Length: 428
Image (tube, rainbow, N blue to C red; front, side, top):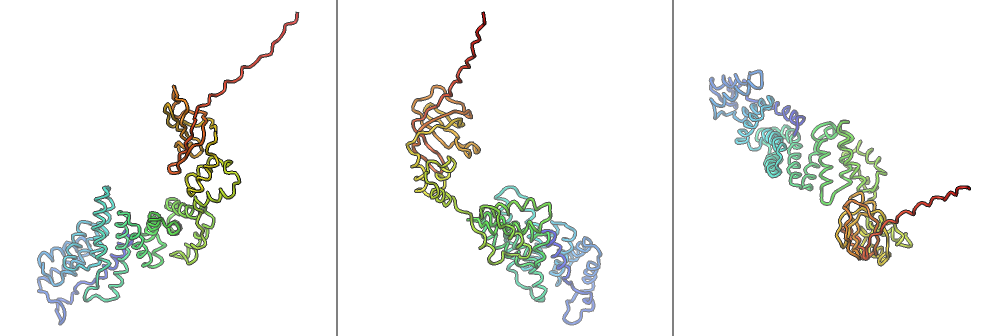
């Protein structure tokens, strides 16, 4: 919960009525108080500041610990303490209220609010998860709370609606701390779909949780990339400008990861402006990008001579193609000799060299070829130096990628031809 939800709760908490001044007359059906008790009670009730009123009601309960209006008084103390921002006093009041009214939504909400703030500050993962588990227990009690006797159905429904987002958000926070994306998604969806539409667009806790929901879809197993893109796009659209640059990259990444590029993304950007959830048929029109193995199969089908494939395409086939397709590409070069100029050495022994040959290998600083040498080296090339080397394709592995060459040998650079200067004859 954050300050927006807290303010909402306080507004509702403020509607809770205490025992009226009519108690002085003690008509039939009302609570009876002695004159001294009523004077102490009335003194507290008429205080004009939250701090003064809370202190006066605390003094009242100390003098009359078995007061017949103890629950109402603790509700008022909770309300007053929360207005002062005193966390310790508020939690103390909430604890005492829950001891006599376990279903108090107000008390449970403040427990969740403050204890979640404290839990989120923890840096030790185990301690944080344990603290969030405790918060989630309060939140679940809040979701399961039943209407107290004497409370109007409409008032209880209003209070349940105001506190449910707080409880569901806390459950999601706990789930995500344990990498339980599925349960987090369920809690967040319940929260977001259970509030008025304007709360899903205004800057506040619900909009923030829409972004958290996009992250939960991204970390799900397997990732749900289209829902990730939808909720990140929606939260980016309604977020303040300063936050759009943080949120939008996730939307772009998930959409492109699924579709292969950003074509058609404008339809999603338009749809989030008038829909909370993805409209029917939207996702059906976004086709998934071809799988790497399908790209390899198409490459093979459209290349008459596989030996002519660029080295990068061959390596793609070895890494991502179906075993039969990868073997087919390797068979086109197996046993053939090849020379590779100016490749980068990543490891060297007297009998073998590992080198970076393809552009991807050089960019990632990862060897993609091993040359088993015919003649042991007496002087090893330095790691990071460039050499020209030749060998014969012998075998490969796709994961991790490594192409093994037999009959390897370094190719010495040709010395430049000496420059022949013209002979000038001196005339006699």
